Image (cartoon, rainbow, N blue to C red; front, side, top):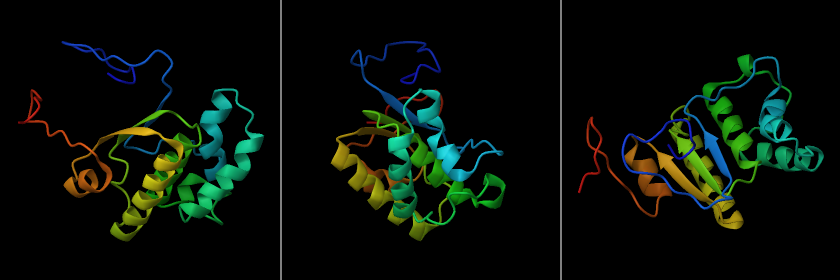
Length: 160
């Protein structure tokens, strides 16, 4: 509902008029004919941004997220965790004010997940970004959240 992909059946979602959103889905959704770095740059290209200044930032982010050396690999040669990190980089490089994350760490090994979470926290704090995280992993929620909302089974209601 926040991203506009679904309409509310009741109530409403209100955002400030010019809030920019980034949305990382649970699946990486990478284009198989593009390299990993080309997939990471896709959002900027689609939004007609000058990708030139972002290339160095992309390379730096690949290094930070332990993907250095894999920039020119195609998705079929990458692990699920690598693809998920590329999808996260693709979202972050757009510099949205608010990021919607749907199970962003589900394909990551535990040690990689902890490193990525630390990098993400630093990145968000440096840039003043807000995040709405949807997860079934209570450890992810605790590690990354200022506030946690638990939903009941269907129909979903906020648990008190």
